[in-house]
Length: 348
Image (cartoon, rainbow, N blue to C red; front, side, top):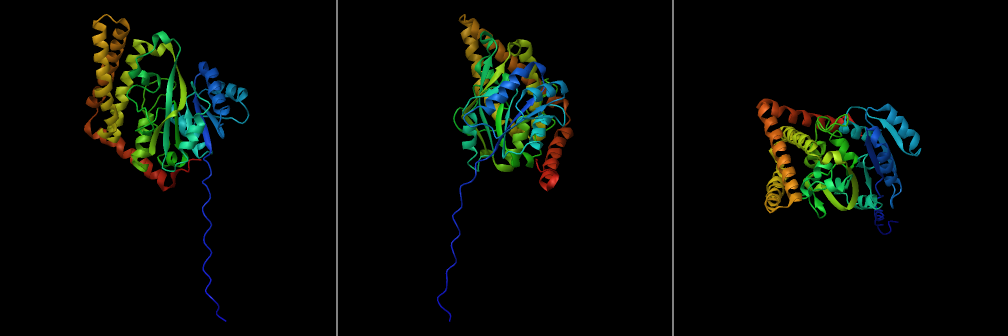
């Protein structure tokens, strides 16, 4: 008896993708930021959508590590960094955590209650690989606040940054998120960039790292989330001419290092910022200063100082670097990514 052919049973419809587990990672190093670090952790745990995991990595400060371990909830993991500097601390968090998405928040920043809700909703879209929030400066002395085009000096969202949701070249490090698998693919944060020992002797670790992420996953995979709001302490000491001069000089030399490693295309956003934002702001402040506006005169002086110092650092670094040496770091970066893709690290 042959009977009738029986059609195969249809496959069950795919279920909803489970929500990503969010790890909030905080890199700490300074004793004087102890209270700020505790506030940062509380903001991650007490929001409308609490973090699934919180990891604090302490950079070369065992007493601070012990103090944080004693003060923070037992659910918060506190680890020493595997290396030196902000990039190494963040990469340590990659290896010491388990969440699907790592949300990096600076130790002197805190996130608003719905911050992680906005991040989780964004990463429900599988095309989103990394994201940056809107960083609002928390001025220690509002009377000394920098002009908005220089908010990047205090690690905050500045005039000239994208304002609506959409692709960006890299997030601001004070509050940013990235899929674990993507960060592991590029080997974590680039160790040749970023501050060490609390000193800004280098910068642009986000630019270096997320340039590799964009090359691997596409330029549209990194997005800006203006509704994910964090607040970043802006000390009065960082609003002085001397700090601005030093910070802008480091910005220039680090941008030269990034160009040397990744090519001139990596500077596209910064060229646009300089020509369409910084220079027009400087001109506008200068004209207002000529009419007797003292506040705008200060802003013009700050803009001119930052522009001159960054340009000197950038051009000076390029001039002192031999052409053959400029090409060498790019090869090293690509070799490192190849090694990770070949199985050099799981990111756990």
